[in-house]
Length: 378
Image 1 (cartoon, rainbow, N blue to C red):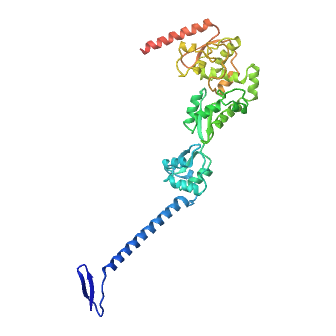
Image 2 (cartoon, rainbow, N blue to C red; image 1 turned 90 degrees about the vertical axis):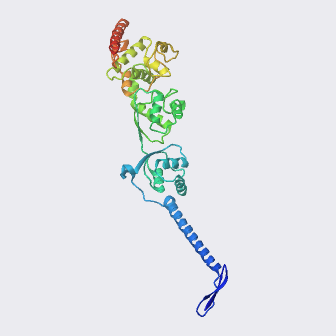
Image 3 (tube, rainbow, N blue to C red; image 1 turned 45 degrees about the vertical axis):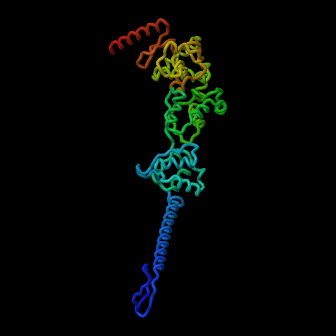
């Protein structure tokens, strides 16, 4: 049988058994188009399924809880979530740290779980590349890792802020305001206008989410626990207020780090106060200069300040640093001595004298020793 065939060159015939078939090339084009459409739809369906599965895994999948402590070191990260951070800020921190893969999907998961406002600031041990649900649960429920901060004796406010800021998301301006907050002073039972001088040196374990005022409260609580009724009674026996004791203690702290010598240093200042003499204490000058601590010059001793104990007799208005327990006890229990003068021996200690003549001789001897040492160096 012949079949009728249309080509670009015209119609033709093909041989078929018992029938005549006319082949239209347009039907072949439609078949190919349908095939392309089917392939396209299949690809779209597969892609959609992949997106849905990925979205479920990254956003909706409630992965089982994980014990981060038991993970190997290379599978966990210590991350700090800053205080006051928004969901955007938190997700960016987590992505940059390698905890999550995608900040946008983390935000979607947090919103899906209604956790936008319940993620806590602090320092956390988190699994590297954990699921969004796992991370969110930890940030909602885990107790933040406390940060260990050591505040040494005799530090000023600027130094304390630097030490805290190195470990915590601290707002230095808020911390200064808290220290100088008269309302907080009254709340904590202090008649003073500032809590400077009472920020007790110690090693503290602080949650990164702790407010600046609560950090101040923590340090003041350490002082209050130490300076109890028995020490207040001892201050009263000396006819001194706790603030005056802390002022003397801060001067002792600035003068010596030798525990055995603190009580002799204390006796010098107590004796001078009783006699109405100028204390002539270098730590008070270090307090008022802007670029201290450094070597002092004669011009520094001329600075007009109520804290300048080379110009004004008696105790300065308040502490010049934040003294530790050893210096506080030395201020409360000075050695029984008649010393009125002392001079640093260049080895971390002092030579003590009862009279000006003895003091001048001691200074002369030390000056001679220093000159000999300088000659040897040359």
